Amino acid sequence: MRTYLVTGGAGFIGSNYIHYMFRKYDTEIRIINVDSLTYAGNLENLQDIENRENYTFIKADICDKEAMEKIFEENDIDRVVHFAAESHVDRSIRNPEVFVQTNVLGTAVMLNAAKKAWEKEDGTYLENKKFLHVSTDEVYGSLPDDENAFFYETTPLDPHSPYSASKASSDMLVKAYMDTYKFPANITNCSNNYGPYQFPEKLIPLMINNALQGKSLPVYGDGKNVRDWLYVDDHAKAIDMVQEQGKLFERYNIGGHNEKQNIEIIEIILETLLEILPEDDPRRANVGKQLITYVEDRKGHDRRYAIAPDKIKKDIGWYPETMFKDGIKLTIKWFLENEEWMKNVTSGDYQKYYSEMYK
Ligand code: NAD
Ligand code: TYD
Image (tube, rainbow, N blue to C red; front, side):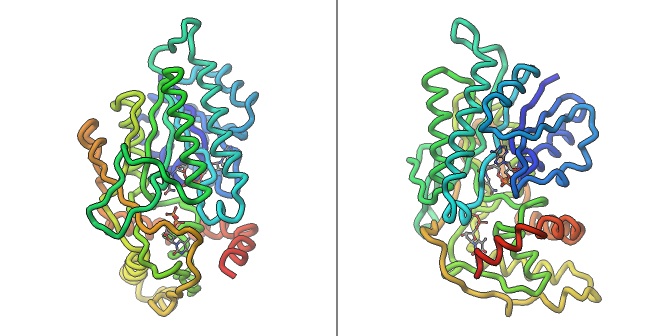
């Protein structure tokens, strides 16, 4: 039975990945989820699987070397899937240090702990051990408004925000471990994800939540920045395929072939809400374009991200399966059915964050 160590499994993508893996492998695998439960980590995301015999949750900080080494000493870990990170660009602009701490130092601690556990005396590694570093397309910087320009695996790293700079640093550390120690790893760089359990500081869940409450929809700058949106289950599938079918030491870009301007996303959310909400639902009255409010632009706002997921398609056969029109419906339905989840994550500290961020 393969044992997975998933870091950051209580966050958005990590929890969707854990659900995906149990749906796919059921009792064939064991998953240990290590997460320090920052504002973004939420065990409610995993309630339905928390009692599985083949699942363990450990509350710990990935920067805690002793705690990480202990996990490797006590468990025969076969796969590391490293999601844990500070993940929000706006927060990184306001408070960069914690991004360096978790994303750079935390990754170094994870790499060291895995290397220590897996490396044999002759410098080779125990068989079939693999580390996958989950990264972002934001490390490549920003593309011009030219439909033919894409990020490739060979695109030089050129991060602009403290978030993307910290992720680029962690990518380089993983690369250094592969180059120097032949450490068995892969790096994946994925475009913007959307789906259930996404924290409402990111564009899509924030707009859904605000629209349902009749609150203004804050659009940064001219609203024409472009992101390439991928349904989170497709990302989970790609990670698993890279780990099992990819070539070790390779970097794979994962993208949705779904570039949209922010303003288009907001309009689609409003249309879809009106399509899905029942005629007699009182929240319908709130939903409309009058909520759209242009606000000051994000500092250093990257103009456009777009991935050409050619390599992962050619080498592994992965492609984005979920059309945006279907994925956004699934996502909005999930948020409508999980109002309690939204209430819980937006109580307390979220209010403070929101009023400071959008004042
Ligand atoms: P998230 O913010 O929703 O979740 C991050 C998780 O990491 C949380 O559960 C948090 O508690 C945990 N965490 C944070 N600091 C920790 C620490 N020091 N020790 C242990 N756990 C800690 O993030 P997400 O959107 O799920 O992103 C997951 C990963 O995927 C990140 O590495 C991110 O850079 C990458 N990524 C995200 C996107 C996206 O669109 N969200 C796209 C590409 C790549
Ligand atoms: P976000 O979800 O924060 O992801 P990222 O910055 O990592 O791509 O933002 C997606 C896009 O939406 C980005 O161009 C910034 C924009 N945006 C807004 O216009 N308003 C908002 O309130 C937020 C959170 C984002």
